[in-house]
Image (tube, rainbow, N blue to C red):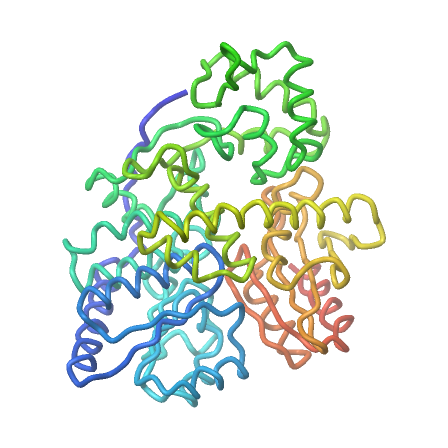
Length: 482
């Protein structure tokens, strides 16, 4: 099952040279500001791509002796912008957010900001002078470029050779954003540029294998139970069920009294694992698609301790997501910047709490059918009572990868403050239609006085609670219209 990843060629539509020219121009502008004593604040999102991209941008500036700070925010809206403005930094660098609020940012900061992003831009704003966006350079921001690979291009503009090590962090962001959409769940586009740099520098090894959490560190049954992408009903989050299923099949779980890991199994034994899992996947529907997602390219960091989740790039991303969703973005940033002591210890403890919360939310959905409403191709989760605002993205991603909902557009909502709702949406892994989620969520939110946006495969919105039905109806109509 082991093979190296085949090289891919850049698409003719990719304009990497123009991207780098724009990045170098911005780098020169920032150096000039720094020489005049300007303080810079990097503002980023709380998920894995946000924490990775913010850390990359921060590192690039800090290595040039900038007076720079970094801050992660769950959402960017007019109120959040006003709070940032009150801090009175001379320059604001936004990663993984901001493309849908360029007018508000210009009003607040004038020319004192730049947005480095991959989310889709509202019509008419793509040529904004303070925007560096993947779509403007021929990259699909939903599959070929994340904010981390964009921030890595920015870092290379500062010091192409000195910042090559940041390519590893860029891969974490790309995998955290589920952009492994090429054959065999590999990376393409601008993400592949970062991958090639990481491989050339000896930072990462690429192999083809089973894709489970804790491949080298956890017993086989725990690795299966701790894996959520794809989500396997009856096994994900169910360690005892995974243990029983493997035991009943006659699978050899121990060697000399020691639990075996996936990393030490033979190819025949790995095939046996897939056969056991097949029994938990519906015979009808999209079971075969889900099985394909269990095998793919594995990205292993050579310099990380084999006994920690940071060894595997996807598991690294899971750690960052947990930090963000559990309101400890400081830990995520510290880990990206190299802390392998206290920050990592706390983050690993946080992972357990994060998984408990996810399991509780998913169990609630299984037990209470009235919390889920399906209309046509849209599956709506009404999570006001049991899903925390920061968890909507995680829940929507898991459901979109599950056999039950992978052919749906998944829409998860949760309460935000006293008078608003937070929505996260995802395109199911086997969704048959063509919908641009970024546009749908932005237009639906604006129609009810809210804010929304994202990219084609994943997007979010925040709206007034009282307009939830109007928002849902708008989404349903847009999706039905195709």
